[in-house]
Amino acid sequence: MHNKLQNQFLYEVIIASLIAKGEIVYNRERKYLLKTTISREKHDYFLSLLNLNHINKSIYFDTVDGTLVIAHPSMESIYNKWYKNGEKIFSTRLEHTRLNLSIILLMFNLYAEKQKYNISIETTVSYQQLRTLLYCIQFHLNTPLDVVEKHPKIKVSNTIQLYQELCRDAPIIHKSFFLKSYMAAKELSLELKK
Image (cartoon, rainbow, N blue to C red; front, side):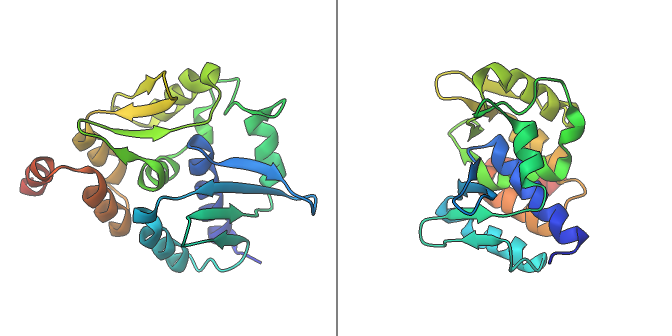
């Protein structure tokens, strides 16, 4: 059984995953589970987070293909809030309280991809609800976010501003991973001079 902090960490990973490409599935044992994939270059970071939070139950993580499966006591409740008629919607109302900076930082660190001029997160949230999701994320950030329509993605061009907002009070493990993963050498040198 997990304690309150472990459950909170798993909850934040679940929500960060749902914003990206994670899906809640109903398995043969009649349990709701989160299923997602974490890219290879993020495995060590994620394993470190599991160790720091003493997570060894309720989770399956395959380090070969990056498959992540999580069981959580609130999974059915989370499913009922995030899905409508089997479609992942995030929310039909503007509920910024469903997110916090820890969830948003995990979302970027676990699922964002560095592009030439920006970072982006592929999402499977219903396209009709993406603007609601964006509003709720931006409630916590001043960094401008965009939606890429062709393949639904959340895109950020100003990585320096995003780093400053997300990582200001974050533990060093999150800061260093964000810097290494998403900041270009020129941006990094500017940030380190401060």
